[in-house]
Image 1 (cartoon, rainbow, N blue to C red):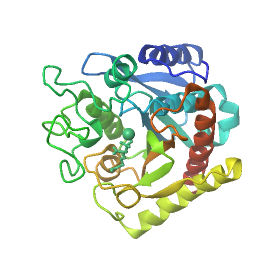
Image 2 (image 1 turned 120 degrees about the vertical axis):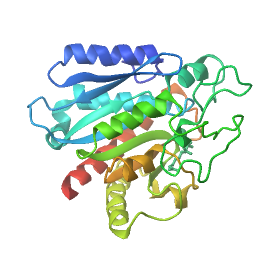
Image 3 (image 1 turned 45 degrees about the vertical axis):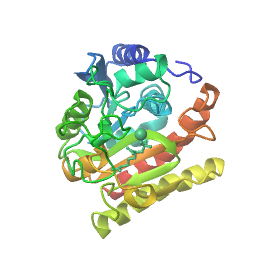
Image 4 (image 1 turned 90 degrees about the horizontal axis):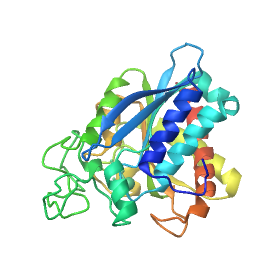
Length: 302
Ligand code: 0X9
Ligand code: ZN
């Protein structure tokens, strides 16, 4: 795998299969979903391989098609946890990982072939405006705010909650982790921001959770500041960004009962959704420093 390239969906699937074959003690492809256009979305489980069940960290990326740096970062994280397992012993001792690196393969392919800044899925192909914003499609506070009922809008919520196979795939993954899931991390771009609940309204679920979110986010922010000097922002997404309901992060927190749920808006440098390939190594490395620190902090708290 070269870190100077954005991979296509089939390359991502091949990479996951290769890892599972080569590292059969620590890596398994645990789940395969089908996208609207019948592409396979693979989730892998990464463990230490010691047979001891740990609490689960669930990571996904690429729910928004154009945010190419998100799947690239998910692959980098997978690479670290599998091929640099010795450097991440501390994490693997405390957690098992479920990672779905490409939630929206149809939109992703479309953004490579036809429209670079496509965001949504590719359902309703006969409509004048196909696609749904899968991150407005979850059944928690669906349609309350920051979303649109017009299929031609970028933030179209879909005709009903979980109308999209892509959001259903993440839902099932989150629900399968209910009770053991400790941290849900959804990779997006662009920021850099670390966002935590609520997203559907401004404010926090409660002050205890808020303090925990802050503590974990700050561990990440400090680690990056030490590394590169860059200052990441963190806060409740409704306050730092905007309110938008029906997203995966609030669903993971409220319904799948993950005590920690975050949306990570990766940095775009000055290129927004489109950092050139030669910037991938920098961005992924820096974000991994941040994410790693947040996971270690989580291990101290729970
Ligand atoms: O709007 C979104 O879905 C996310 N930003 S993006 O630019 N990547 O599209 C932010 C989602 C934050 N979480 C909630 N609002 N619940
Ligand atoms: Zn996004």
